[in-house]
Amino acid sequence: MMKLLLIAPKWPKRSLWGQIYFRFPYLALTNLAALAGDDWEISIIDENVEAINFSLRPDLAAISIMTPLATRGYEIAASFREKGVPVVLGGMHPTMMSAEAKIYADAVVSGEAEEVWPQVLDDFKQGDLKPFYKSANLFSLDGLRMPRRDLLNRKAYFFVNTIQTTRGCPFDCNFCAVTTFYGRSYRMRPVEEIINEIGQMEPGFLFFVDDNIVGSPKYAKNLFRALIPLKVKWFSQSSLSIVKDTELLDLAQQSGCKGLFIGFESLYQETIKAMGKSINRVAEYKESIKKIHDYGIGIQGSFIFGTDYDDGSVFSDVLRFVERMHLEAVIFSILTPFPGTRVYQTMLKENRILHTDWEKYDMNHVVYQPQKMTPEQLQEGFNWANKRLYGYGSIFKRLFPFSRSGLFFSIQNYGFRQAWKKTIRP
Image (tube, rainbow, N blue to C red; front, side, top):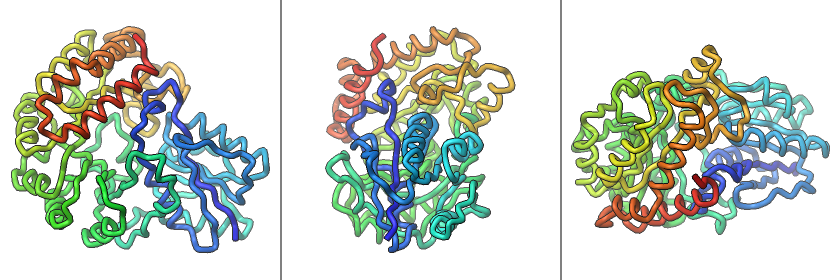
C-alpha cells in the first residue's frame, strides 16, 4: 500500500492568522483524502496545529497552498524533494501562479481537484506524473464523497464540523479570486446529501464554508427548511442580499443560524462601485444590520482599508460605525492584490505592487502603493484600528447586551485580541 501525505502549511507568525487559537480544519485536505482509493495509506498534517516530521518517507506528498502560505509551502516541498519524495502542489496560489509553483513541485494541479486528482494518483502509480493538471470542466456537486474527517487531529481544533453546500459566488468583486478559481458559476449540492453528511458528523456547531450561502435564495430556503428538524447551530458567509427576503431571514433563524460573515467592505459608495460589489448600498447598512439583528443573528463584518478612495480618516470612521452598529465581530483587512484578482492586474499595470514577499500577502500588511496615503500611513492606521477594535471597551460596547450568541462572539473577540497582542504592537 502506497503512502500519501496531505499537508497544509502553517501561517507566518507575524500574521494574525498565525496566532489564532480557535482553529478549524481545511476542508480541502479531507476532500482530497476522500478522493484517493483504498490502496493508499493517507495521513493529514496541518502544520498550524502539529509539526511536520520530515523524517517521514511518504511515496507522495501533496501540499495545498493559499498565497500567504506559498513561501512556507515551497520550503516544505523543497525539504521533501531533497529526500526523494515527489511533491504535488495545488490550491488557490498554484492555480494563479502555476509556472512559479512548478519550480518547487513535480506536478501542479490548477482549479478544482475532484476531476483530476484521481488521475494524478493513477499517473503517479504508473510512473507517468504530468507537470500540470487542470480540470476541463466545472465539477458537479452531486454525489460528493464524504470528507475523511477521521484523519484529523480532533483535539487540535476548536471544532471540526466544516461542510460545503455551494461553490462560487454570483458576484465578481475586483479584490476576490473566487470567481477566477471556480469560474463564473454558482453550483449547489443536493440538499438531501448535505443532511445525510451532517447526520454522520459529530454533534456540535456547524460552519458552512460557502462563499455565499444565500447566492440562490430558493436553494437556501430549501436547505434551511431541511435543517430545522436537526436543531443545529451554524455559522456561514452571506451577502447583504439576505435582508431583501424576509422569508429567507426567518428560515435562517429557524434553522439555527447564529452568525453570518458579511462583507460590508467600505462606507463609501464610490468604493463599493469600484469593487463591483453591486448588492451593497451604504445608505442601507444601518437598516440591514438592524434587520439581521432583529432575527437574533450576529454579524461578523468585514471592512477593507486602503482602496483608492480611502484617506487617513477611514480608520476612525469605520471604527465608530462598527461600534455604533454593535457588530459582534469584525475583520479589518488591508486591500491585498492577490494573484488572480482584477486588483492584482490593475496594480501590476500601474506598477504599484511593491514586492512579492508572499508571506505579507495576508491582508495584514501593505504590499502596494496606495493612492491617498503612504504605505506607512496605511499600515499605522490599520494597526491603530485593530488595537482599538480589540480593546475591552470596544468589545463590550459591540457585544452588549450579549443577546446574540454572546458566548460564541466573546470567545472569538478574545481570541482575536490575544492574537493581535502577539503580532501588531502600534
